[in-house]
Image 1 (cartoon, each protein chain N blue to C red):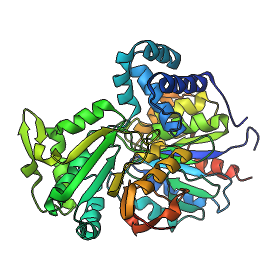
Image 2 (cartoon, chains in turn brown, orange):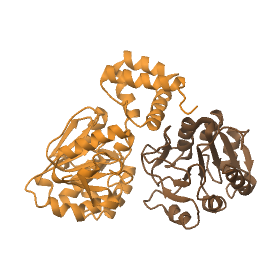
Image 3 (tube, rainbow over the protein chains, first blue to last red):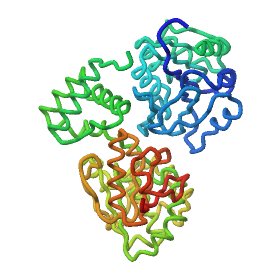
Length: 190
Length: 276
């Protein structure tokens, strides 16, 4: 791949997230070269079923993000329910109990804004299906910092609102099908 | 180009330095991503065009400080947040606490007091309230005042009640508050044995001989060095075999003082002080 080296992939998804992520995450190899950080809107009870669901289906390591944990390649981190997930410049993860953003905790905007700040152009951010507008502001910051912005083609999304909102704020974002997004990410391994 | 020092970063660093030197509030070792978010939010909400402008404002106008602190420190909590934590305290920690003739409990970073009242109710239900002295501390004077008032919006009570029941509550939460004009005022007998105090985990020192310290979702805002300081403070403030409760997603795993504590209820992040 040409362009700057990539230090992380961040993904935001809401309604329809599981089906969409199932078309992407299982394809990533165990030695995927960067960490993947994911915020999915889930109800705020304590158990996060996403980790166990994807653990059995992915070659890469799947776990819930912990505070102060260094994010490492080949690992997929899900934000815990009821906490925002952020990333620091040294690549370590941070959680926060701050108020909801866009009626959500975790919020996609919070992750994307901190990742844009931490990684600048060395970041790939992906917005998938969802029925709200979370992630649109964060995506604009990713693009503004020179990172790669990718949005799921609204026509292929089970809930197009979130991709449409992201594209409205970041018209220059790449628009891809789920298969296209998976191919793009696999391209990072080359 | 992995470290970029943009203008805003310089401004934030200078702002935190100014806040410390002028008012002795020290956020310099807070975890960067979160504090940056909050400073920027404060700047916008308080109507300043840049962090530098906010700095100038607060340096020359001390009346801005309380509002600023409300943006920089967390307010959000619930009574009996994470009911399983309170259930573990009730079922597994209380039997140990019952063996002491008198008890001290410290709620560090008590914010508006939700956790303090939760513990006070729990201790009353378990028959330990009358032999316990509670210390509720925070750096934010507004928050401490609110904690001392113990008044919460009525629309939060449903969630509080649900949490209380799930924690194994033996009484009804409604026994402890009076509802009036959309607000629920908690019974003043719940704070008869509470000392409210200004205390900073960043700059202040040990608080003596505690049997239980509950400090949840406070240290996630600290960088690792500051976390180490706070955990060291807790260790030195606990009696031998005293208990420390942290937030659901916090742990001592990355702490320098990890060997000073043993898991007591691992999944609830309840630790017991032990000799290293």
